[in-house]
Length: 313
Image 1 (tube, rainbow, N blue to C red):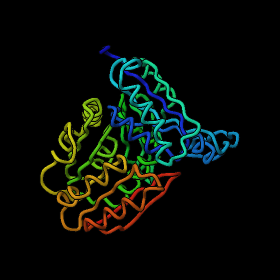
Image 2: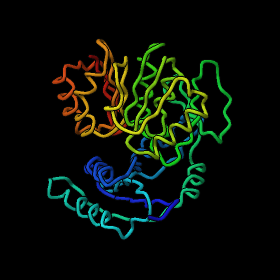
Image 3: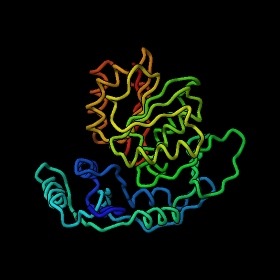
Image 4: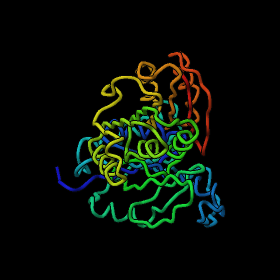
């Protein structure tokens, strides 16, 4: 395996199959998923977001594909895993999903180049009323009451740019109480854990199955000076012992449904579960799983094609 490089796998596909493709890439070893949907740019065209005016864009054709991007460690361009990804993606049509148009590409990306390219497009972003996600290399003049999270995502998911991350951050800001114990399952860059700690959590325990993501999260914890408040482990909810007041999980639908019973076990009575990564079409499946486990839905929020659910034990 080539050291210091990653295989960037880009699947261009119809919007209906986005979540299924994300699950395929995760199963193949991608530690995080990037979704590039031109419809999002169309929605914010001409709007002012945190002092940054997004330029007008041309209307997006109905058949315009969404790009689902994952990174595999090493040079996998000619490895069997790529053949398996292509076969599973093409097979989605047999499951009744509209996959057209579909294209699967793979390119080699060096870590140093990848990190530098991020910096060109990643700028401070306000989420909710108080939270500001600030890249570590950018300047920002904090306003009174701002909760500033300084972040370098590295190769991990979680910049505050994706709808699911913003949804979770807004709900954390609304529901989190000072002194609470918080679990962050699938922490990625650590953005939710960092925000929770800066919003007043007494302790945050985070985990991620991807060692690269866990390493990026630990570095961000150190940079924000929160080593005493946040711990990051490699693994899933199984490694988090005891009971938390709030559990956050910004992952994918199937994993959310799978861990709901463990979430219930690891929440105090009255504790909250904030979860996103759920595409709207599968919202009801997650709600059914939550209710079957004894959790009560107390709020939901939607942005673009994604939903965030808040439930109480």
